[in-house]
Length: 172
Image 1 (tube, rainbow, N blue to C red):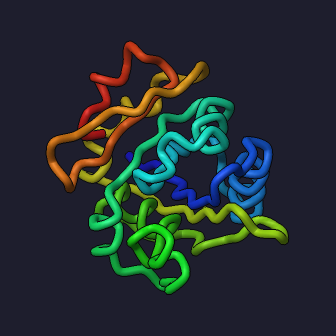
Image 2 (cartoon, rainbow, N blue to C red):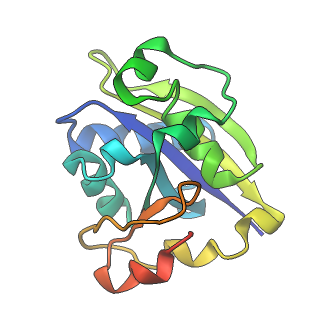
Image 3 (cartoon, one colour):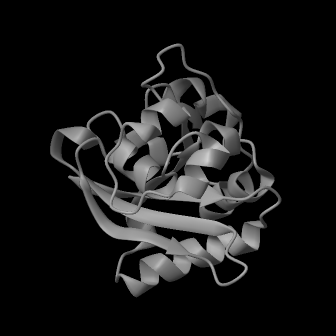
């Protein structure tokens, strides 16, 4: 069994439309189906950003957030000093996708929305044992998102479009 995860980075105040447009365009351009995506992933500092939360809800996907230290430990092909200065990690989109993929493959490296680029996204494939325990993360489609919390710094914070599913998604 395999699935996809889309890592998303964004500036404050980004719109739902801009996030959704980039995610959909990126998937379409790579010949990948939205139905194969299991989650959107980002950095903790953006887990409550209305544009990202709203995009996850519109796309019917749970939102997963990682601490900057976890993302900073993920090797990525396109690190950025500017992103590091703003977020504490040299990558958000690629690192978040790869963190959730847990050893999976980066299929689409970081893409930026049109100028003024306020959103980035990247797509990773999750296969085999990395998918175990994560397949239910896509089960709550539609509604509003809630930010969860984790006591393990290597575990993501999980959100879902259904408050009832937040506890169910711990550890994604």
